[in-house]
Image 1 (cartoon, rainbow, N blue to C red):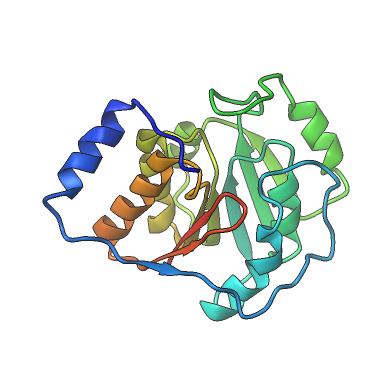
Image 2: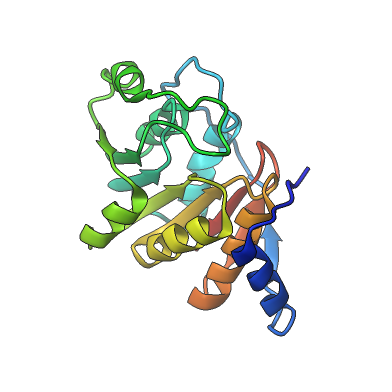
Length: 205
């Protein structure tokens, strides 16, 4: 069930979209599912998405050298991505946000949990600080930050301009995230796909 929001930026974007061309959202239906070679035994709303990463990579002919993730939390998605990409950078403040249950400092805990994954680098940073100084291009970027329209749009727009493919978690659970991904697709001319399972995964290519 999509969660409503009182966020001003969301409603401004929602009303503005009424005067614009509708953004088509294509269903992403995987032709195959492949579990990653290694996975963490932690609870995660991301469970299920790891099985379609290989299909996303092959369907959109992505290179698998570099991946950037905004929103690591306990590291479940980070570990899954590291099974498909040679290098994964995970950026997070590691103390949760208004939409997470756990708001304790988990940097040390997550770092220890991922210490055996030699191709993962964790960076403690706000996404806003990161995007100011990073001009790199990535094969894939995953966005799973605080689920507001303003933050998802800002982080996601930068991400689509710095990656071949950008994926967004929670398109089926937060109206603000879904709206932001649609608006980014419109602004960038990218095609939007949506995978409905596991709280939803928006895919822009």
